[in-house]
Image 1: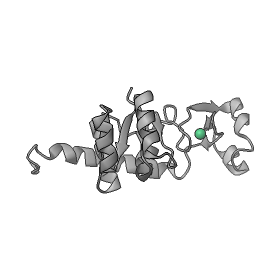
Image 2 (image 1 turned 135 degrees about the horizontal axis):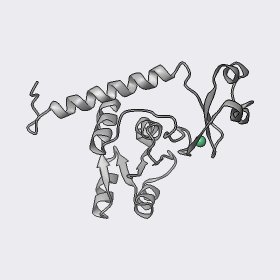
Image 3 (image 1 turned 180 degrees about the vertical axis):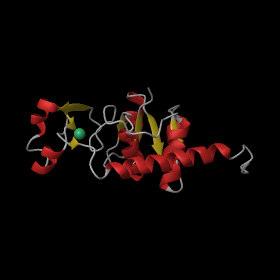
Length: 172
Ligand SMILES: [Zn+2]
């Protein structure tokens, strides 16, 4: 499975890669040398909006993709290029904060998240996803609609990209 390292400018891309279950290193304080080093040592694809960094990566034979333009288009481009389904399945997602793997807890097991979420939230939901690395807790709350709505938008942008012919003209 493809893994990624993402430069500081592409935080939204990193977020959506993690939520769709892709191992994605994103640390905005890493400098260019560190990004190149981790791309090489971990064999991660470097996603960057910096032309100079992109050139350095390709000169070293690293997999890299130069991404520019509106963020939604960029997310769609990455998903399209790497065959990523625009769908967030919490049981496969990575922690959006730290890239950790999530563990589902429900029923009696959910006691482990008591105190990590508001009491009303704890009572209201039966299933949570806990990040073992940073203790972040996820549940399908009100924001879930925004997540699925955004994934639908990305799906339609991918479909539109595919309608654009090789010569750049629309065929629809
Ligand atoms: Zn985490």
